[in-house]
Structures are given as structure tokens and as C-alpha cells.
Amino acid sequence: MTAEEIKLETRNYSMYYGNFKALENITVQIPAKQVTAIIGPSGCGKSTFLRTFNRMNDLIPGARIDGKVIMEDQDIFAMDVVDLRRRVGMVFQRPNPFPKSIFDNVSYGPRVNGIKDRNTLMEIVERSLRGAALWDEVKDDLNKSGLALSGGQQQRLCIARALAVEPDIILMDEPASALDPIATLRIEELIRVLKENYTIVIVTHNMQQAARVSDYTTFFYTDESRTGQLVEFGETRQIFTNPSDQRTEDYITGRFG
Amino acid sequence: METRKTFDRELQLLQDEMLAMASMVESALIDAVESLKRRDMAWSRRIMAQDHQINKKRFAIEEEVLSLVARRQPMASDLRTIASVLEIAGELERIGDYAKGIAKINLLIGEQPLLKPLIDVPAMAEKARSMLNRAMEAFVQRDTELARSIPQEDDDVDCLYDQVYRELVTYILSNPKNLEQANYLLWAAHNLERAADRVTNICERTIFTVTGELTELDTDESKCNLQ
Ligand SMILES: Nc1ncnc2c1ncn2[C@@H]1O[C@H](COP(=O)(O)OP(=O)(O)OP(=O)(O)O)[C@@H](O)[C@H]1O
Ligand SMILES: [Mg+2]
Image (cartoon, rainbow over the protein chains, first blue to last red):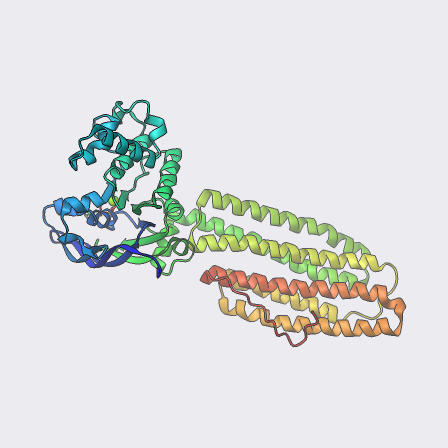
């Protein structure tokens, strides 16, 4: 990873839900404008780890951390959280559009950020919907409810909503697990296009998906302690053809997990 | 593990098929040379016909490999194993072709007796067969040490080839009428030399399957290399 710019970094990062240590001593560097996949068995702390980067875990009572989380040389816990969340967008497993029009869904973030001019908002909506590869399908009826779209379209609407505030980083937590194979491939194609401009961190349970879309892969694992630990980080190609750690090998070949 | 019992069984069966193919090829090598040595035309023809069975086996393995890739989407060592089996099946098919070629040479030489009793050529065949046998053993045992040691024996095959070459050249020089048969016999020896080279490729697959590294195992500075 020598020549690459590092966008996000954790240093000896541990995360606790009250007395329960969900993640232990994670040190990892996430390269800019690349797709980094996070894989690992259920409950190993993938979502917890992902939610670190936009400080969503802060909202959970009793949650605390150890170590450092850095975004471009800045400690994210020293940053203004609103600013951080603007720069770090998130897409969830189940598409969750607001019960509003397509236009309102996409323009919501910019409006919260104080943009009122209708033409400016229209430009942002179009750019974001194009960015999410949804524009052609919805351009004739932007007043339609976001909930009236198909699951795959709803997920792309959520991606458009994330793009609208011009983030640097997009976190995706199993973004395609509720979609059919075609809608899934569309999202994967979109991820490939988005990485030209964004740093993407994606959690997925689908090994083939991780192998297809990501440049780097992080394998998390947990034992009886239920505390998540990072086992292996490396180029995706290497992780899926020749992982260095036996636990990674066993997981991706379905020997446990 | 329970979760992948069926998959592990499928991988086992695939490798069993490959071993079955390898033993067909081993027999073909030995038999082809033996039929030449005994000038048994009928036997040579049977060996040539049996090459179809070897080719069919190769197709069956390829189909199974594709089916496994489609159904299982193999990763990591599974992926390397499956890719290697396909590659090895290809090498075996080519070794089978060399055996067939030797059987054909027996027919081409026709009714005339051999210039001399064959000694080094059967020795080459036995050497190549033994290398192949152990190369397959190394693969199924994932024994990289064995896989690395076998290609070194390729020198012995090269030296035998060298000896055959020199001997045949003297026959040609002593009587130009010997040229045609000497040429055929040289081809037979050449086929065996190539067969041993392909065993080296198989050994490389064993290293790859175990370590994930693609490396060349052939030793360039052979003591007696005519090529
Ligand atoms: N809000 C919470 N309060 C307390 N414990 C939590 C909370 N959220 C998650 N956990 C625990 O933290 C651990 C990691 O959970 P997390 O959701 O990050 O796992 P995951 O790897 O995303 O799993 P999955 O693949 O099932 O989505 C689990 O043991 C979980 O029970
Ligand atoms: Mg999760």
C-alpha cells in the first residue's frame, strides 16, 4: 500500500458497549478512493467497526472507545460531528428512504445544510441521481414517493441521498443483501464507478461480492469472548486466492462461520 | 467440518479422477515403448485407440471443474486446487499424446527390424513414468519437498536422451540407410524427454496449490542438454 493515500486509519482502536468489549485493538489503514471490504462471521463487529467512522456509535448509551480513529490526519473524535457525518455518508442493509418524494429524499441533506435555492437543489438532485445510476429511471417523476420504487431503486436512492451532501467517504453495511441478483449487480457496478471519487468501505456477507467489488479486504473474527479482532488485512486478490492466516482461509472456504 | 462435507467429497472425487487419468497415462507410456521394443503392431494400434479414453477423461475432469466453479465459487486453497487439477489434466493429456506418438512410430518403422535392441529408450520411459507417479503422489499429499525434488531427476532423462542421440548418430554415420529409422527412434526418445518436462509442470502446480506461488522448477543448467 506504499504509494497510496490513506483516508481512514484506526490505531489500537477498541470499542465497548458498556462492559462488553466489541472490538479489540484494531489497527488498520484504509486507502483513499479504493473499495475496502469488511468480512467476517456474524457478530464479529463489522457493523460496529463501520459505524465508528461516522461516530454513529456515539449515539448508543454506554458506548466508549480506546485508541485513535484518524481521518486525513485528524482525530475524528476531535472533529465537529455534524461536519464529520457530512463527509462520511452511510448506506444501510435495508433501503430506508424517507416517506417523501424522490426529490425530497435526495435534497434533504443539502437543505439541512442550508441550501434553499430551488435551482441549486435541482442541480444537486440530478447530479446525485445520475451518480447513483438512477436518474434515467426516475427523471420523469421526481415527485413520486421514494417508497414507490423497487428495492434496488430504493437502495440507489439512498446512495443518491448520501452523495447529495458531497461526502468523501461512503460506508455501506450489506447494501445488497436485500436485493435480487440483477439489482445487486447494479449496485456493484455503481460501487466500481463511485470509487473514482469516493473512498468506500463495505460490509458484506457475500464472499464473491467482496472479491468482485473490493480492492482491499479486512477479515474480522471473534472467538468465545465475542470480542471482534482484526485477523487479516490485504489486497483482495491475495486474501481470496492465498490468505496468510488459517482463520481467513477457513472462513472464506466455508470451514467455519 | 459438517458445513462443507459434500464439497470436500466433490474435491476428493475430482482428484481421484485425476489420479485415474494419471495411471492410464503411466501405462500408456510404458506400453507404447514396450510395443515398440517388441515390434507388436497390434498392441501399438490398441494403445493409439486408448488415447481416446485419456482424452475423454480430460474432458470429464474439465466439465467437473467448471461445474464446481459454477456451483461452489471456490476460494483460496479450494480455488488453487481446482485450477491446478485442470492444469494437470491438460499436462496428462499431452503426456498421453506423447505415448500415442511412440506407438505410432512403431507402425511407421514398418516391417524392418530395429537397428539395435532398445535399452535406453525403455529406461527413459520408466524414469518418466516413475517421476509422473511420484509427482501425482506429491500433489495429493501436498508434499512440496517431494514436488521440488522430482524435477531434478529430469537431468537423468536428459542424459539418457543424449546417449540415445549419440548412439543413433553413429548408426546414421555408419550407414545412411539407417537414417529413417534412427530418426523415428530419436523422435520416440524426444517424446519421452518432453513427457518428463511436463512432469515438472505438474510439480509446479503442487507448489502453487500449497503456497499460492507460481514458480518455475526446471533446472536450466542440465549436465547433458542437447537442446
Ligand atoms: N447497541 C448495542 N449494544 C450492545 N451490544 C451491541 C450493540 N450493537 C452490537 N452489539 C454487540 O456487538 C457485537 C458486534 O455486533 P455487530 O452488529 O457489530 O456485528 P456484525 O459483525 O455486524 O454482525 P452481523 O454480521 O450479524 O451484522 C455483537 O456481539 C453484538 O451483540
Ligand atoms: Mg452487521
